[in-house]
Length: 475
Image (cartoon, rainbow, N blue to C red; front, side, top):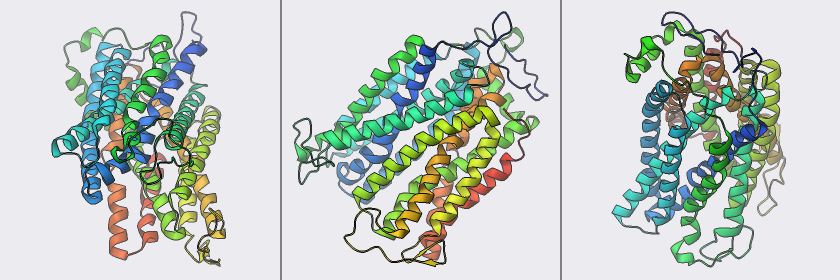
């Protein structure tokens, strides 16, 4: 059921997709499973390329100087963020005017596939032109992945009724975590070999015979992620219905998509629920990203963690995220997305305070504990146990924050502008993405304290929670 949109009135609450008899239509299970597979298909880009395998390889080996390599990667990431922030709302407005969304996703999917394959050319100690080519491929891949996600999210609300959308979003988020973890296990455990020993992280010989000095295993991360995406995204195009509006209204045909987008932005103050939500999401998503960026660094500093402990730490958080996404999705349908986000943010504040309560000789700020003995096993000290407990809490509630956020956006957005609003949703997640890491780095440098630097994250979580409390509508 299409909802009318009047410029000077807040949009009416969105109702589920309805059939001729007025009852909610639910897409077939094959369509729901195929939509979930999109998150599974896309996640290796974020897990393997953006975070764990390709990014460290590029910084340490492709450029030849880790400091310069890290700065190049940072600049490329920032450029991609700018493109996503600017492009997402504009593309969303264009898509809403034209109706269908899957053709757009197909274009972005081809761009993502090709650009990830191009990462194969990232040879060690590459020439300047090759480094530039690889960075451009990474920028394109990042933008394509985010743009495709914007349009996939816009399809989600039309697949199930309102009482099931939380579970669908949660299952999708859990599938993404699982896809990232399994793809990481395949590559790190069976393919990417250490240049010194030739063995994988599991101590096994790689499945393929590579030249360790050429880092063929590391370079294969890009094509592997590309073909993983191409394989698992096929059901999305075969079975997910494209429910975009078929044609714009007559009185809006004279207005360009850009003018329509500007009208939406200009009138946001007239829709306070949407405005406060986008502002809140802008802040708490920055804080959440900083937790994941600096949490492992803090643990490694306090306990001297190496690659094994950090790898296990990542797996534990991923498993916690899968559980949190599934349970959070079910609770979303019972309690409402705004309540789930608020409760999860409050628990995140508790978890961050708990993590910061641990140092080399104390837990919970005041309780003495023994320093971890050199050479002892992974996670063998009391401090590590407490740290892991609070970190697992982060994993459990971080996924519901993200999953419920797209449910809340879908419920607040007018149906005829849904992709456009999901573009603004992507914008809110990128426009200040630098701010939390910058504040953490600045406070750490000024105070010479990692703990105080990490404490800056609390400002973003608490500010986001306060702004979210101004959202009055529950969906």
